[in-house]
Amino acid sequence: MSSWGSFSQTYVNPEHLKQAEQQVDVFMGMFNRIMNACQDKCIPNHYHEPDLNKGEQKCIDRCVAKYMSIQTIMGERMKHMSPLAEPTNNNNNNNDSFSPDSL
Image 1 (cartoon, rainbow, N blue to C red):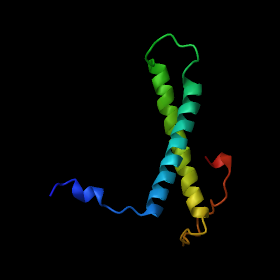
Image 2: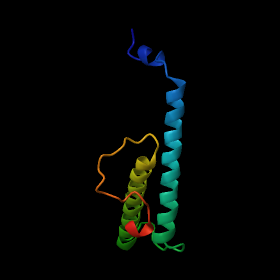
Image 3: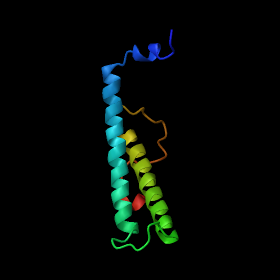
């Protein structure tokens, strides 16, 4: 019996497949937004070198890090706002409202 036979007969739950496809779509959307935003910000339209220079590399690194940081913060806040979120017992922290100044 070949080792590949067991893989070809594996059942895949269609709901899980749909969720995985949605996750890939969300990831690719975020990746494309990061690429477009950071490329527009950090790489000039008329470049003269085939490789990124040091300044462009640093700019892209910072741009991606900031984008990911904001996405993480927003994800955490959205998770806490979700009706499925577990109630917290921490009443000392009243940072439930969002304001751009808090970033």
